Amino acid sequence: MVYIVIISLLGENLGRIIFYLSISIILIANIVKLSFFDEPFYPWEIYLMKDAFMIGIRYINYQIVIAIIGMSILLIMLAIKFRKYIVQSLRPKLRFNMLILALIIFAMNVYILDNSGYLSDLGIGKSWYTGKEEAVDNGLFVENFFLIKDYDEYISDKPEGYSKESINSVLDKLSRCNDVKVSSEVNIKPNVIVIMSESFWDATQLKGVTFDRDIIGNVRKDIKGSIVSPVFGGGTANVEFEALTGLSNYFTNPGIIPYNVYLRRPTPSIANVFNKNDYDTIAIHPNDKTFYNRDKVYKYMGFNRFIDREGFDKEKDIKGTNIADEKVMDMILSQISSGDNPKFVFAVTMQNHDPYLNEYSKLEVNTSSKKLNEAEMSILSNYASGIYDADRAYEKLINSLKNSDKPTLVYYFGDHLPRLGKPIGVYDVYNALNYFNDKEKIDTDINSYITPVAIWSNYKGISPIASKVSPAQLSLHILKESGVSYPMYFNILERLNREHPYLQNHLSGKEIQDEELVKDYKLIQYDLLFGNQYLNEN
Image 1 (spheres, helix red, strand yellow):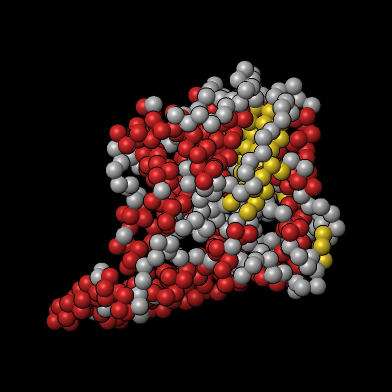
Image 2 (spheres, helix red, strand yellow):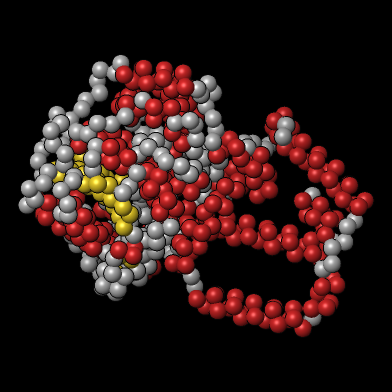
């Protein structure tokens, strides 16, 4: 009916071109999204088009590009030669009677899709978690109709009862928590280094494959727990959103990246907290500064400085196709050694970003397996070599800090598991080695999301974190261990740690959203991201 409405308005020729061009764009977006994230394309991801292009150029097949350019030139030449005929055939033609009929039937479609009773009879359903299964069951048009219809709910979803009084009530409950511990090192202002290592994960857990060395031996010595990442294979910004703000992607919907969709104003974060405790706050990410809007978001979060790819030597500091992890560690060391103020440094590495197929001309790790084909062996071997590089870079950082007279805390963790597919797939290596418990339920297998967390200090012992926590829980651990003063609302994480140490869209059910504690957490998140930020008044 969408098609008939369009051709009734514009005529068959022009209408068909506009209709099929639009559908082709959506289908291509779906193919790309499913290939990289095993998720369909969502309407709100129009915000991500720039970032998708920047990722996509890493996977371009230049033979296809040449073919497309050639076809485009040919079409342009044909269009010029037959321009009079084309202009005449594409002249808009309104078919009034057909348009009225089409709009009536279209309205009937909308009415049926808006009525839960009819949907049940037709076997069409809307679930709390939108995803690939629902998109396949409902079809492209129906699924996107549901998503666009509830667009406001997906984007902001205002909690019932949100007000200044409700926020004050939450704070009152948090002020009566007697079990919130604060670091005893109150007279020390340590340098605090938080490193989110791209796709860092312990690949030695894979069965049926051997490595000639422990690829995470140095990090392994300092592991204090694990995070349950909100994403698999990509979406790094969603992990750092949690770790920096203490907020959760559990209250957002699939496809939403808060950096791109939500953050449009000053937003409280641990960087902001360290700022208020007289720290210099520095963000480091050796990629384009506009990627995921980091150039704007880091300012909103309170970072004083942001060192992006332009801060590195793009010829000498490269290993593979990205800036080497070792060079990021060198940058961190140079930042904390300058000036007298204590430093909070948040760094996101890039060396181990996929694709991994034939990434390095020389491998640092010898990998063997009888279960993998040639392409899968190349992917895993190159990935393992990159992780081994990351582990040695971590060792270099720690050895340098051991000799420093400045008290320092280091947090090091992986943002998500890697995409190990050929050439741009997702699960090929995992499936060949039978890593997941159930290939049909990969989304709900916790093994899809667990990455290690290492914590180290040169001046005191470090308390471990729970074995499986959300990245948001790291924010409170960092604040407590550093001994800084921080806003009371972070203490909600202490309470959550006992009942829900991780909240994750794929793993945590909808039913817990009715619990008082989870509702309080959602109120806090809404106030800081969308509301009147009453929490800033306390």
